[in-house]
Image (tube, each protein chain N blue to C red):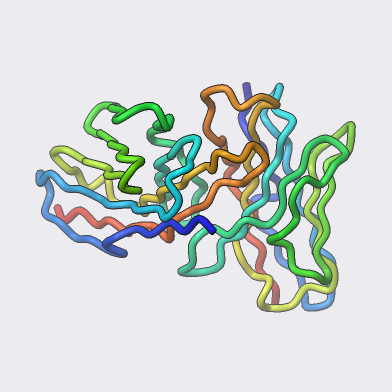
Length: 115
Length: 113
């Protein structure tokens, strides 16, 4: 079990470019959550997805940000026309379809730097 | 709206001391509470998970307690070591099935050799 896999680990983009962050959940997990951690800040919820569905996107900025979790393949967090304020660590977590007694398992994150 | 607060924000203690990190939450309707560790520039490592029906969980030198009615959890670290230096994050999962976990801002712990 490879755990939650995020790639790339580090991503540098110039202002105005697009950033695509990928998250492959643990095997058997169908729920994915994206969090953002700004420097010296706590982790802030962005979006919660199940396969082919966005369940809660209340933490997503209204513009330039989008997320998907297709039937096949990883979940993608997409940031269009990046600005310096988007520089942060983006973490993905996954959980199984029924809550059971499980906590969240997090990936190692993608550190986005906008120059 | 659930809010999670961690006190202190930063803590420095000499090696070998026992210490307690605090976490409080405003809504006692939680499903579970999880303590994580984060090293600088790294991801989150789950340390302990306490279900709402449990009072405490132990792993090695770590012990986490939960008092749901008062909205509090503590993480006790025994015989601290320099390798324990990290940020410790508390996160609560609401009872609502579709709700996301809410994090505190963390406590930055520095163990002095």
